[in-house]
Amino acid sequence: MKLKEIYKHKDIKEKISFEIFPPKELSDYPKLITETQKLKQLNPAFISLTWNAGGCGNSSFELIKLIKAQNFNIMPHFTCISSTKNEVLKHLQELQSLNIENILALRGDIPSDKNLCKKDFCFANELVEFIKNNSNLSIAVAGYPEGHIDANSITEDIDNLKKKIDAGADAIITQLFFDNSKFYKYVELLRKKGITTPIIAGIMPILSQKQIDKMTRLANITLPDIVKENLEKYKDSPSDLQEFGIDFSSQQCQNLIESNVEGLHFFTLNKMKTSINILNNIL
Ligand code: FAD
Image (cartoon, rainbow, N blue to C red):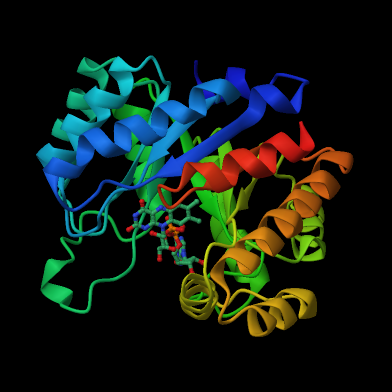
């Protein structure tokens, strides 16, 4: 099912999705497939598969095939900064030959070795336009409730997001956030800008202190005091921290659902159990 159809559903249960990432080793694929099967009980709208900006080409296609064989709707991510138009075209043809219907179109982080930038695509809006002109895929793009780290201001970042929407994107999946007020403000700003596209909340379950430190530092995400306090309180007790994390995310999602969020997308980090526990608390 295409994104456009998915987000027409009224019931939030039809608009839950999950992100997974390809393990480094091919030998770990079967384990990931077994883990992913646990998500069946939640009947996800789709499972998205991250793309390694350095390129993990063929092995990523193998995983797409394996997940599709489990009867999941799969949405591969794709980053364009290190790709030529010909490479993207070939990639789109391969996806369509696998009957993939949706794609998350990204620029990707600028590589430290600038020689890796191919210059055919400088920003994600150019990729969206290219996909639109060369495929029937339905396209999601990334949105940043606290602004993208490269942007000078949230206003500038929203102007740039609008370019992706005007180029033909069907859904916005947000960067993770822990403070719902940031998300609500963002939705308000996007609607004021005339963006009517569904805005899907990106949810990152709290799995460990190291993970939260890394993610929030890299993407400049606000941590509410209650999260900071519990990260400190349970720094030597990972199981207590996870229990707090499940409670926190359950309340966060409950609040979003009560505010009519248009969809929830869980960044599972390939640890399905935590996302499942959160959803079992609220659905
Ligand atoms: P863009 O939308 O191009 O924006 C990048 C920056 O450029 C922003 O500051 C923006 O304001 C500015 N900008 C955009 N368009 C223009 C323009 N036309 N002119 C001038 N400035 C412009 N990374 C991966 O490597 N693999 C993944 O699988 C992956 N999945 C992700 C999933 C989600 C839900 C999110 C939120 C992020 C993901 N990322 C992934 C990270 C992403 O690649 C980085 O955040 C990257 O730095 C920006 O990608 P983008 O598509 O948002 O870029």
